Length: 122
Image (tube, rainbow, N blue to C red):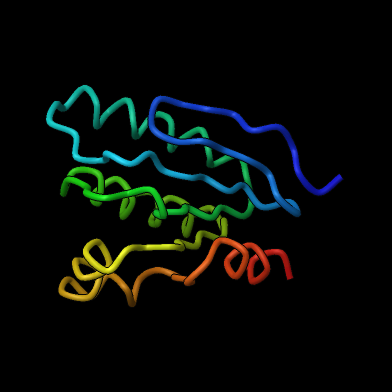
């Protein structure tokens, strides 16, 4: 079986495809409270049990700098543990932040979820 049941958090939906943990972020990632940011981080930490992770931004219309900070922190954590991490389906308005800050050079970024899953699973 290549796909497992979807699991939801308050911040994303998670599904296993071809051995890759696919995380589809919710639309609004512009948290205003530190508590929301910390809860988001705790949910992200739960992903560290997987060896391959794709974070899909397709539904994200806006995100706070705190969310971006946690994605950067996750990138560091996955790198230290030898976990593969890829991002995909980033809308132009969000991708612009990755370009301006040169973060696009720190992440594996793919146009589609299928492209990201295929790259990590191969």
